Length: 170
Figure (cartoon, rainbow, N blue to C red):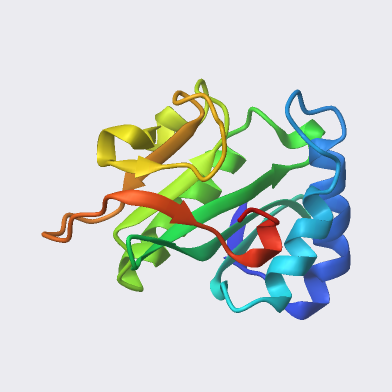
């Protein structure tokens, strides 16, 4: 498996990967692939943090981190993480998260936020965001709205996360 930065020539394939990855997901709205396209066009997009995983000569996974704000301080929103169904449970998602975290630290980000599975994301260092003083701008079970410290910092972050407008969350 190889992880690299996504390029514009990957967009169509990534659209398909994201769509297939969420087709039978327990918690999905069916628009995750459209969210990826919208986020790429917005101000919150960070090209260095839109990554693809290749295996068997094709793209099999994708992850995107975009800029968000908490109390006027920049954080990252992880959304979505997608792996083709036939490649799931092989460590590809975790490898994408780890590479994303590594790049995010190099770019100076200190925290990442995710709304996701309480069984999956804690394996990559995520825990309930409320423990960091970070609140969701919507109703979400605390075990599913999580944060991760990417690098130690003296900067304290407390407040409600403000996502990019493309997320459709006010």
